Length: 254
Length: 254
DNA sequence: ACCTGAACACCGTTCAAGT
DNA sequence: ACCTGAACACCGTTCAAGT
Image (cartoon, chains in turn green, red, orange, yellow):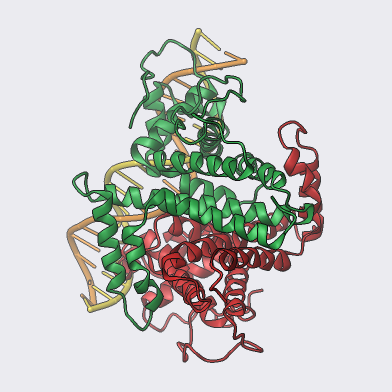
């Protein structure tokens, strides 16, 4: 973690929207949602609040921009190297991934894993994406995700009239499941670095087993699955399940 | 809307956690997420902040409790009458719904529609549920939802080892899609009461059509589906799709 | 055009003091 | 045990003033 190379200590170059967004991402990464304040930002950028407000309308816009930057990088990079937030605009089609996937299913998996990694690396993304999704998919970030999944749904041969529903189902699942996974990582970290993720999941699983048998029979029954599960495998299994549903409902598909 | 009968103007009865949570829900309903402040709360309850802090640890706990109360009511009531927040603990099994559903699929639809209605009536629920989901499903609200969907997944005959994944997929979809729907309603209201929901969707659809054809070919293509869609039908179609996936992957099912 | 930084209104939370 | 309310630290945002 923390592959970031250059600290923004060179106060020379002028303030810009990108520098501000970059600093915002760093603050969010370092201290979570509560870490992004205008005081912290002014200190890090060695300016006054007025300077920031000249480049950015308000905190909400800053949050949206930070989310957008990280998601755009994740969508462009794919699974493994979702690390760099902004940087090189590059050619957006550069064939980065090890063995670039070709079937629509593989591409969906690839997009999903890219987001999965990004959320895992920037836990604040989960809440932020959920919030922005809940505000409607007209905003750029969620629209970007919707678009890239939707293209593959179309490539899958899903009939026009069902593409909206199918894409929504996939997007909701991907964001929700990836967020939950990040929450597990984040919660595990809460207990200190000596607690491994496996130990945390074991403890959480144990807590589920101690729920009231009358109120939570199902949750108790699947407690073992919480303990034993392989994050990525489980995540991909969920996607496969939804894709199977799409194929089942629309035999023309695939 | 606003079926609430009794205003908490009788200052007689002592403060209690329930009264505080009830007031919090009213503030959230009336003025959105920003409407819940301790000042507004003290004014409405005619006390000082210290009194509230005696019953409730902090604002976060209050938010969780408000969410919990509304969701619990929605899960207990089912589709149509998710109105009352707390009130009568009743028998939790009381056969309320018009013609109570019996197959697991019908029950899942019923639970989902209940949440759908609750989120539509309390738009702040969408963000709140998403946030609490993203913090992991060990919290009571999301666990409650997970449990009630999970029971039906089990009743469906899904093999043990896949119940966790299947339930997660359903819960994520339901919460995400319901939230998005509420966002549409809320955004429509933003433009004033003279703008109908249909007009708003038409405008949003138009905005999608005007996106850059190179960047958003898919989104442009499904813009009509955004305009024409029937909320509930679309929502249920998504659930059906995931259920079809579950059935397809696990032939034993159903 | 871009930046400074004091000031404002408001927020969640605390705590000594009352009953 | 339960409540009061002044006070504290901190927040997002504004704006007259500088360059």
